[in-house]
Length: 306
Image (cartoon, rainbow, N blue to C red; front, side):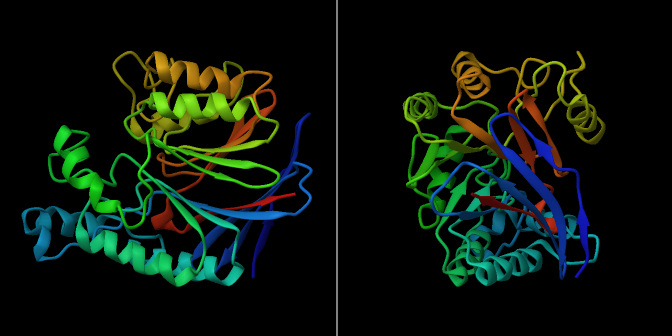
């Protein structure tokens, strides 16, 4: 087993260690977050698997699904569904307290993909939260359309809790908030829930799909790499981050981000996906955001809470 040690980051409110462990075909980014918990916890975070399995029930999109299936392959030749099976075997092996799916686990809302994901999740015996990305419930040309929300999002009912744009798990020492920001905005419900949780004394682990743009002076690398990977709008804004120099937030989302970044925020870490490369950097002086690499390439974040 090969272990590469990375630089540790110390912040005034927390101390974090990180490293990469090779585990068969998967890359496990191990991190430690010190919150003063009475009982340690383990969380696994995965995003962007882009599983594209299709059968005759979705025959209208079967050609597109086939080309997408061939597009998402790991550097060592595993298809997205094969890689997901290996990742779920790892989850079963370590038996974390919670598995968080951070969006784009499926590449489209096809029955075969959703059923495959559920079968693999069930094998782990682990509690999980399935957050939505910008691909999960798109379908053909239906992309955040009324039909996508009314017809294709409900297909996830067996693996995802119905919610107003967020899901929560509360524990004795912390709370997990998973927010659906796949259309580059958050809901009023998610904002209200963040306000409620921020008024409590518990530290918040926030998970989104789209990464938040760092404050000025922090992580120009994230902005530069996001533009290099995905291009920019005509005015130079990043197409894949959420912020004033990227996908511009509406009033609700702006207030949400302001609370996350505020000096008295109870959010202790943000974990996200979407951009298909790993990045760990500061959003503000005291808040780190960790972006996982693509699940179909084998990336996993294993977060130890202490």
